Image 1 (tube, rainbow, N blue to C red):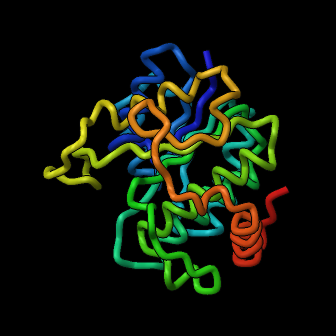
Image 2 (spheres, rainbow, N blue to C red):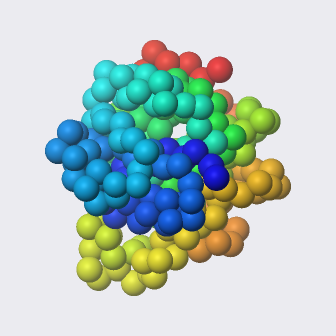
Length: 238
């Protein structure tokens, strides 16, 4: 049995991942944006051992959320599932990039970190000097990939992977989505309890290593992105 935290786990892929991991006998802690959603997920998944609450759009709330998580930890696995798809660059950057970066830096290191990226990251623009105003969804997922790759390199005792869940019919994906919903969370469930360090640094789609933007492997770019995130948040990844 593994102790697992999943951000953004009140609906969609996060909730489906949580349900599958609970069904497999794991100790799962969910995360909700607010108390209303926390109450709803407790009713939907009463087997979850706890629900932490924090709005990832707020930097101060993310700091408080990290404290809640540390009070319940340590965790074997943390899945950074939460994300938004919006035309607002600042909100996209805050939720999709800054929140997982800050939680990674502030929460006690688990054995495994899993970050949800997207196939849309390939070829996206990346303006390190204007991250708060120039980050769209695709760019945010490139940044998540770079973060995951940086952690895989910098923290040798932690297995860090990233996942493209595909375009699946969730509330975010919409009813026109063409990928298989079950496969959208199967990879995260598999990686969450996998005792194989050989997967460290890999990027997966539907249980297989997948094509990704090779900027993710650029150590100079990793270092520059981490420096910018530290400057913006005041939180340094050690």
